[in-house]
View 1: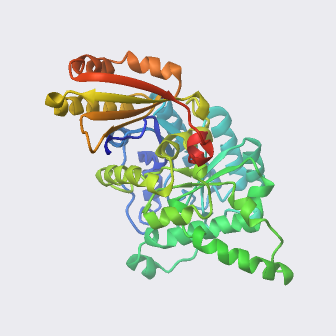
View 2: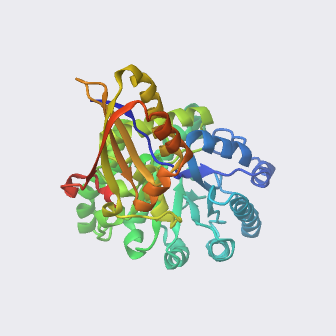
View 3: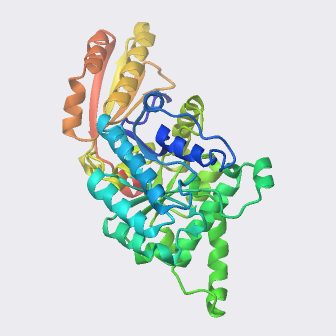
Length: 436
């Protein structure tokens, strides 16, 4: 059989994007830090961000503050900058309902002011989580001085978006030749997460939901070495016993950056599909390049046993508690349509079938899948595997203008139509992230 159409449903989430307002840029430039990370901070505005989202098929983007951390030695000044940023993000979220979420910026390394801002952002502004740098001027995630902040965030069951920043000590000549983002960001993320693991943060605070960027960075490579060295270090009194796997199992991972086949396979050695999320890193990568990379990623996920619907939508919706119904597999309608098409009108029919499949998948969240196939031996025999979220979604689909156009336009092209309602026989053979 030849597959004609296949697509990912709508309402997709991007958990890794940045808001860069003028207020933040002015603060950074006032202290000569616009090149602190070794490359320019890109231009950004909400209109261009929404345009990118529409072109990429992204319904909702999670906004965070970029690097560098706006701390210039004065905790009160940093708190004011973060407050301004968070209020602007909250206003943007309110202006475009359903399009933007935001994770609040916190004025670290001042822990007291960070707790105060986290409380205001989460309880007053309605922030969807917080963003934490891997380190704030030498204060790394996992460090004991962050315990009050972690305790508060755990009490709120908060989502934490982590993001690499410049290490506290780095060779400036080296990063001028080899940009931070190409290597050191991955190492920086890895050392910060391993520091959290070494202090058992994720087990001691089990309600934290921590998102690790860039395909897990170097964690898939580092964890086997950590597990091998840990017993030796514990026996010699240099470390306390920790359950590495228990800590890592609580992490989520985004696919921002170079989500190559090798990177995806490596990531799957340390996590499960339900903890993998899509991220773009907009605007640090050009919109056109991101749109192309996203389409390529959609096409490749299935080859790794991953459900695109879960990666692009459902996992993030659950993580952020978004208002998207999470249905069990048994609620779905799974049906096979067997169609005999008039040979003289086959090409016209196929055009109609392609159009209704594409429009349905891009505009109807309740249409989970429409897979059209032709019999190789008899191309006029067409099969369509239809998957709907539930009966309500199916009935709504029948009333859409694009389905009616297909139904009426092909009425004289279809010689016979047989509809076969089905039930999955062995759900254990299904991708776990698709069962929900």
